[in-house]
Image (cartoon, rainbow, N blue to C red; front, side, top):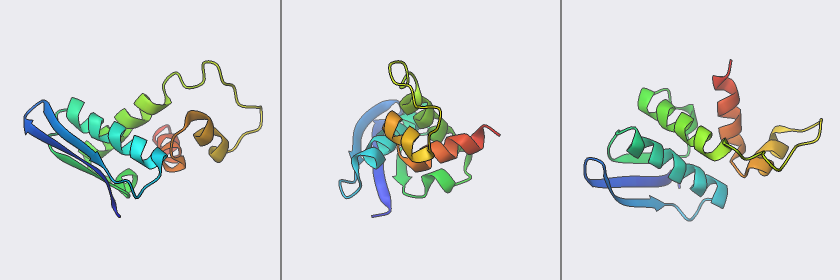
Length: 110
């Protein structure tokens, strides 16, 4: 259950498979795919996305997290505006991303 997804490449730069763990909700699955695509486009090679990926302090994990955050959060508010009062839960729901990713992104802005 700790594995959200995995990425296999049969050769550098060629995705063979991205698999996601269906035991997790769709937001976590979406994050896993975005995170693993980050590893692919950043040329990290075969990768695994764990449930604690956002708390890992490894350079490649941080880069893949940032890729996923930017990919999933870009242009999500063009036609949707939160009210003047909103919570992390409200924003995560608005952007259809896991709350944990939003909190991680907020911490990187300090």
